[in-house]
Every structure is written in structure tokens, then in C-alpha cells.
Image (cartoon, rainbow, N blue to C red; front, side, top):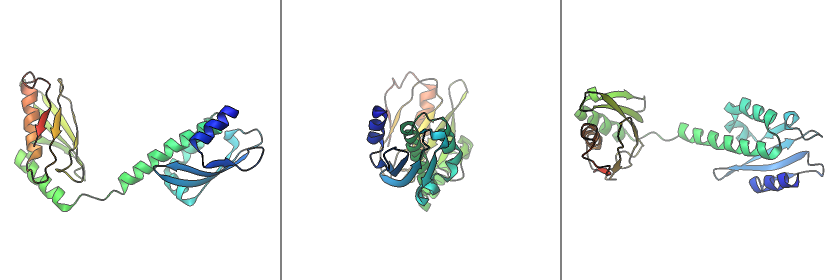
Length: 212
């Protein structure tokens, strides 16, 4: 028990017992540099499945879509320390999802320059784009006529900020992005490098292709 209490204090130093029997804990849980108030009331046998979790309105709002998961973890966690670790991980995920949900949209020039680029490359090369144009998929054919996909996760500062990309090529492919705001047609250059790589995989020698 002493080991568990020490571990709980290390993981949640702002959550402290409020009575000698340690059936009531109150304090804060921390995630992404923020502290959220909560109170946990345990039964006399300290079983979490019969405990009550009281959250501040901020914490309750953030976890509003995770109520069932929180209840499930309270039913199955062996002790308070395990539950707090799981709650902290869940809170991290919830905060990250909220940040992505409320992230500022890209500026108008993001869309205009991207649409112009796709038009230059050819709309027939585009096989998928989400409603925000933050994820697009381009197709490229190898020397045998087989189609391969290049999936790009574009960021709000594109083309100055390099996108994350995934390819389904049978050979390794690596391209680095030179952060130049005024460099046009980077999408086309990446596609041309990728096509060249699929058709002549032995010529690249595994080197890092630069997209200027």
C-alpha cells in the first residue's frame, strides 16, 4: 500500500488525501501544462467501482464525450493510482482532440495556391481530398502501370511548412522539404520526384530527395 501511495504522489503530486482513512482525495490532475480540479470519494473498502468522481466544470466539459470510458475504467482499475494514470492519458487525448477541433483554419491563400498547384499538376492525379483540403491523396504510376498513392497531410502554413506524407511504394522513399515561402509548385515537384522514384527505384540509391 505504501508503494502505491508513493507512486500516486509521484504521478499526481497535487492530489492529496483529505482524511486519515484516505477515502477522500482532492486536488488537481495535470495535463498539457493545465491543472484541473477534482475530488474522489472512495467507499470504506477503497474499491474504485463504488467510488464517486467529482469534477470541476472545466474538467467535466473536456471529458463530456468520454463519460462511458471513465466509468468503465473506474469499474476495472485495480487501485486509485492505476485509475489516475488512465484518467490522465484520457485527458491528454481529449485535450489534443479539442485543440485540433478548434484550430484556426488556414488563410485564404492556402486554398488558392493549393488549388492552383493541383490544377497545374492535373486534377486527374488527385484521387481524394477532404473538405478542408488538409488531407489529399495523389496517384502515381510505376513503370509497370501499377498505381501507387501519395497521401499528404497539409499544414496551415503550407508550403512554408513541410507536410506529413505517406506512400505505398514497394521501395523506400524519403523526401525533405526546403522551407521557402515563395517557392511555387512544391506539390508538383514532390509528385515528379515520387513518379521518378517508382519508375526508377534503383537510381535514387536510397538518398534523401530534396523538394525546393
